[in-house]
Image (tube, rainbow, N blue to C red; front, top):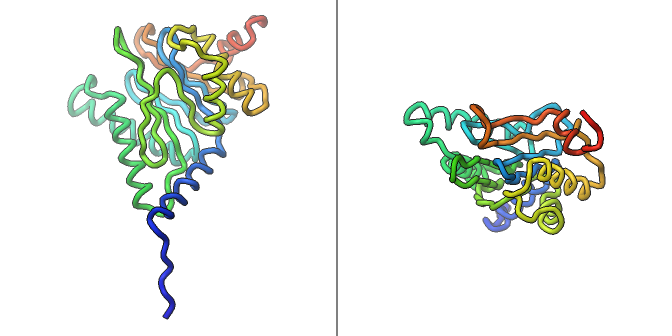
Length: 233
């Protein structure tokens, strides 16, 4: 009688991690960075499908990797936030509680299922008044990273992050929206070797100075003014 095939738990987890990382790396990068009025999210996204979305008041979501998987996570996050806001108070809904829920969901799939989710997500919240901004990165295995100032997910994220650290960023929270957008787009373009145009970008902001809704998508006309200042829109 043949012996059953055995794989050590360490090898199984390593194989899952490599599988998920390869899937995430096939996508395109998304950067989140503070600026002087809040946080901006910049995605290299030529598709008409959105990778950046509002989840709740002052909270935004971005996903890299397999679209169907992070889209399901986005919808689940909205339901989680809406339910908590309904049962308790809208003030009780914050980025940390949402991140913890995402971490638990991703970690459960990674540890219990054969196939891990091929996703990496960002949960971003703008601080109102004197509260600090929050930028959280949640990995495929549920690991949470509390990022300061800026971060990048998806595609060649480490290379883009290195470009931002070494060449483009001094104090992002003191930079204007235009400066931050140009920095992110330039870093992504250098890593991919392509010039990114407005049609291939998805950009959204969380602005503490906005009246009413703080989440706003930047139209191509506004992006063109930032990326091509010599060309009037």
